Length: 259
Image 1: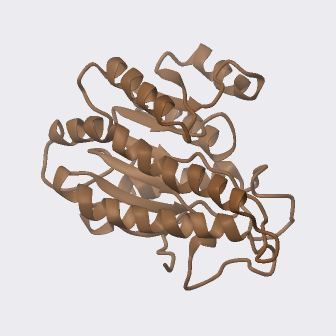
Image 2: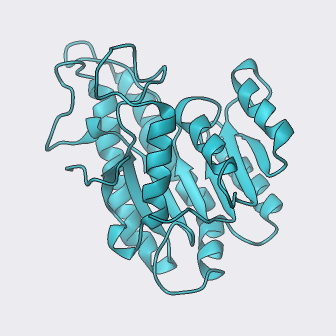
């Protein structure tokens, strides 16, 4: 697998966990992107302190305020990124921002479902729509006819928990609203791959593994992986994706995950 080479990347939910891991690894590449856009709710807040520290050391890191459930915030973020790129387009959109809870069949509420879908499914949809002109521009400005993440791509951070065929870790947590939102995100990814292929944009969904983050919970299990291992693996896989991979659901090692 080759090294990822892109001029510009946007990562949502970039102030902690997997999102922050992506930012760190992208900045640490032998040929880092000219622009790494790190989007989070409160760029100046305490929870974004690590991002702020990175930005003070890396002039190619740009922190963008973004609330993925608010269309006006998404529109403003797209305008800000477009202005910064000065016509070159956005190569890679990583829809990483997400929330989770452990709702069960017995206690899940309407509000649980609304919140989970708003962030985990509708957010990536609206972001992809808002950044589509910049992704198209990047695709048009890249040589060759095939699809790749170095050209233009949308990567949606899904979860094995969204697999309908293999209901992952049910014995640990029913996580009903989370599972449903990620299954819907998988369908969105498939639809995007069909709709955006003609524009030269690759689309794929990723299961990052059961990662040791706040969102991943505190259960000890030998299958759990660190943020560093997960992100390094995903970037290796992302670097090698091509036309045949658009519309697929993959894990951090590049293995196909059942729908």
